[in-house]
Every structure is written in C-alpha cells, then in structure tokens.
Image 1 (cartoon, rainbow, N blue to C red):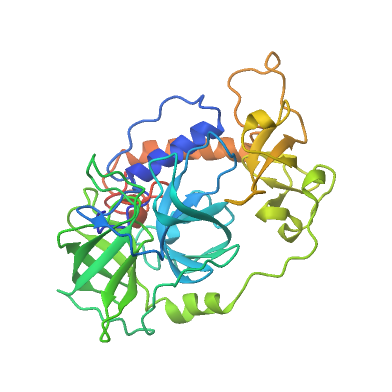
Image 2: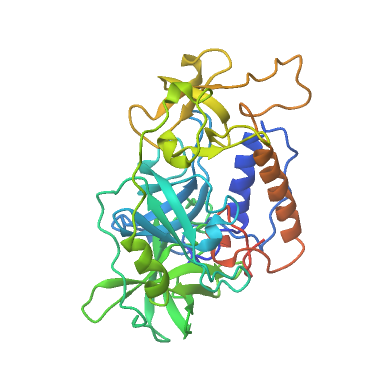
Length: 414
C-alpha cells in the first residue's frame, strides 16, 4: 500500500481494464503491450500493513455483467462519507464515464479471487467535480451515490477550509492498490503512514514515512488527527511518481465541501416509479432509466430504434429464472448479474436478437450481443495503453499508482 494513491490509472489499472475488455471481446484480441510506468495503477499501499478496522474505505469496481467466469475489475479506492455516498477521484471514472456501470466492495479482501471477503453494492449515480482538470489533477474528486445505504459509519469530514494541514505533519493513507511486493497482492485493504511536504489551496503533497500510495489507491482517503484526537478525511489520493516512492499529490477535501460535497450530500436519488417487467424488456420500450429495473440503462442500440432497458455489455434482452451458472439457462442464454448480491441477483438472460450460429460467424465472438460501445472501448484502451508507453508522465496521475482502470496524467501513469 503506497501512499501515492493517485495511481489508480497506472499500470495495474490499465492491465485490469484491458483484461476486462478482452473478456468482453471473447479474449480474441492480441496480447496488449506491457504498460509503461506512466500508467495509473490499481495498487495497494506500498510498505503498508493490513487495515481491518477501516471498514469505511471501499474498492470501486466495474459492474459485473455475468454471474460466472467474469473477473473482478478493480478501478480505484473510495471512502464512505455518508451511508449512501462514496468520495473517490474523478480520474477513476475516465474510461467508463459518469454514466458507466459501477459497484463498490466493502470488505478487507477483494482479490485474489474467487472468494472476496466482504459485500458488493451497486452505484446508482456518479458525478465528477465540474472543475476537474485531468492534467493537473486539480479538483480530482468524484461522488458516488449507492443504490441503497449501507450499515457502516462514514469517515468524518473536516470543516470547510479548515483542515489541520501543515508541512511535517503525519498522515495515514488507506487503499486497495499495489504494494510493489510480489508476496502482498493488490486488492486487499491496507494502510500506511505519509508525511506532508507541502500544502496548497486545493491540495497537498506527501512523501513516504515509510509508506506510499500506489496504483489502485487513487480515490482513497488520506487521514490526519484533529484537535480532538479523531481522524478526519482531509485528502483524496490523486497522483504520484511512477515508482510510488517519492511523492503523492492529494486533493484537499475541505476545499471541496461547500461547492461540491455538501450539495450532493443534501440531495437524494429520484423516486422510482413503476418499472418494466424483467421478462418483457425486449417488447417494452423505455423512455428513461427510471423505468428500468436493477439500474439498467435506457438506451437505443440501433440508430432511430426504440430505447430498451439493458446492460451495455449484454445489449438488449429479457431476464428469466433465477440461476447460479450458465448451464442452468437455455441455449443462447447466460446467467447474468442484475444486482451485486442477493437471492434474485442472478437471472437467465436471453438476447432479444439471437447470436449468429457458429458456422455463420466470422472471426472471434464475444459476450452475447457485443455492441459497438464495447468494441470502441477495447480500441480506445489499446490505443491509450500504447500511447502512454511513449512518455514518462501520461495518464490520470492519482489513480495510476493504485487503481487499474483510470486515465493517467501524472508521473506514475504508464
């Protein structure tokens, strides 16, 4: 667990994202090039230790579409600041955008699979700070509203503009990112100590003492003790050096409170009206996401066609009987995940348009109904990975060191 949490978009993050894309495309793409040091990573705190008590620190993942055979895709780290709101880094949303499908993990061990030690909750809304600057990591913050509140105490926030920050001060960083230690894998919640080296209006810099944030730690919390002895969430890991050894840049939370965090906390999800039946989504068009069950998107796949409730990775289709694996579903159907967990989370998914028979298909085939969105994402990720290899400082810095799927803009990005 390196204190440089701003690496979520770094090498590890890129590797994980590419792995997800290859799975979506049927694992037909050529082996991607090795990520460069500039890529933001999804690493755990370097020179850190386990953090079993930090239950309010969560992992951010791409939402899973399948119930079996789909790898977990760690993007970044985040922190609960209310029972249904998570604070993370804006660059963690670079690849899938604010309309992307996400979920969070609450627990100490997400990876390695197959048995994460914790629970998953779907993200219903994501917003980036309107002043976010990708290259400088200014205002590199995002807020996620969960589909349902969790029974976990959030981290306390500092007063607006009054965080107790000064050079030489000790701070604690927590994240799920890279450890730079082959015997201590990423994907496990770890914590370590930093020392503040410089304090600015919108952020602060920190060095190892002896820990550092790294790829996958992006979006994770930086904590300091206030006058009353309580730890306060004063920073969001945003970026750092490629090696996760020298310096991490963190966004100041107290600078975001009045214009970004507090207004979001005061809001709430729009009430849901009647939703379309899962078994008739192929026949029933939608006009807004509020009509779609389980947080599915209301989108039109064909130009000029009616909008349907769907998951972009699966396209249009109906959801039938509860299942645990693909073998329990009929020919042409798969066991798809509607919600992160629960008895009814997994149901047999049947595409509205049957996939072509093997003899009719040419080349590789992927998940049912692979869309142009998926192919576009794969091409973008492969190009982005190659372009990052050319220089020493491309990508979404903060996440590059710890995360694994963010765009990289700091020295750690690859």
